[in-house]
Length: 136
Image: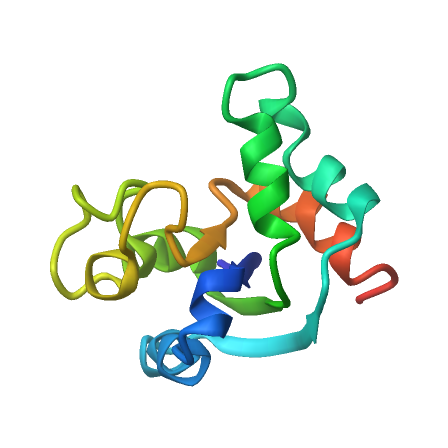
């Protein structure tokens, strides 16, 4: 079944010049990009994206990091897009991510783990409108 997922290249990926190589992996896996934009995340967007982490010890540093530079926000479509994107991305902690995954190949530390990807279809449905309001 075709579905959509949200993937955001975080400031460290953009700053270090890996955006093109990372995006290519999603295309090579058979996903189709339906939206993309490069921008600085607003306070409202970051709070909406990371609402589930509010009150956790790392919340403030997470927001500081996501505002440290531009991101590349994307929406991908395809059969099993959420699970496929998560497989490509790898474990949250780059130290635990397998070689060949995006975080395994490009991530340095937990706080700068290169990419955010929706963890479920429901998360994608919540996250996509934060960055792409009105996307059909």
